[in-house]
Image (cartoon, rainbow, N blue to C red; front, side, top):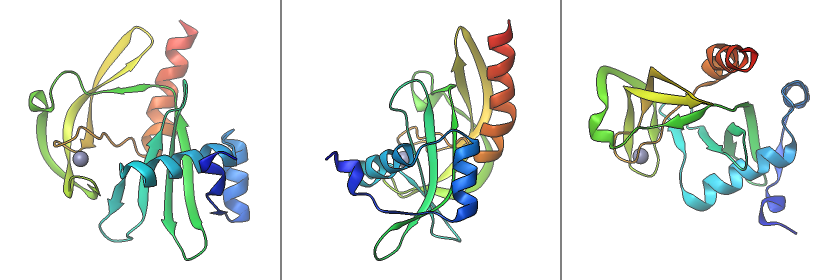
Length: 160
Ligand SMILES: [Zn+2]
């Protein structure tokens, strides 16, 4: 039994449908949570206390928003993207826009700040403003962006 298989998930019916529609397996969700809990690499929301983490086993990055209950991990949402988050060189080169975020980096105990970072997909690199942790370089791609602009950009590049 792989270690991620011990992760017990609590997913609503609606959540199950969402995962199915997005072609995300329960196994993918388990792997994200297992990775986040084992490494401590995750974001925590200031108001809800929920965790948000990602894991990229192969060509796809999976994100899961979840919280820990006594027996299980309750899953609020999950989404994926293929684009790679590239914090080019050092985080010192990032340009802060001054805007904050409700998420903070759990490992660094640092609130995320909006920075100009670079996203890479195939041969193309896009500069984009995203909330990120300037200590460890954790970049947040939120659900709206992943299923919106990022998905569109991936599609456009594949169609070339
Ligand atoms: Zn950090």
